Image (tube, rainbow, N blue to C red):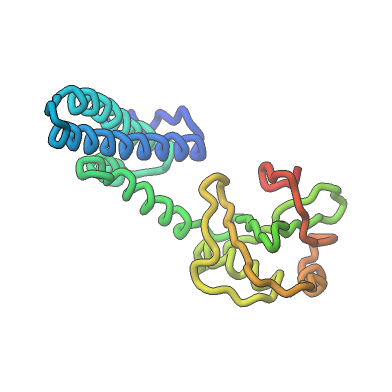
Length: 223
């Protein structure tokens, strides 16, 4: 039966992850409503059962949707049956789906493939570091490939040190949940003048690098 389910991949990996996160947050919201309903029943003067009944139905619906998402999206997410089962069971304790989503997000940032490209959004004084490749006019977020034996977060950390020469504390580089394969780092108290010349000279595929104040960044490109 699992082989039949695994053949169904109606969503891309990015779409499946977004839908699973939506279901996980929805299931956690259901728990919140149920807890509020129980509190209303216990502490309100009339001890009405209506809040619990309404919250229970909403929570039950969100619980089923989350369980279906955990199983149905597993093939698109590349999960094995045991992982999908753990994701579904995580919804049994209160806010377990939210805990599983946070754990899975952390795991996705660590278990990256060697040679995979990642991007880093480095922000200093409301400006973002951008690079311009040779024979190109568009500005992009700086990128690097994950080397063998390092995690994606370590690769992002290495890229920032190579480009800015600023030592970073652990935890300053975090995965950007809104964009795939992208990490974020805000550098506080940066030097007034950052010399990017060594980084430009050491990176043969870029023409220029500078801090830009963009309106937005779409698909790792400045808009």
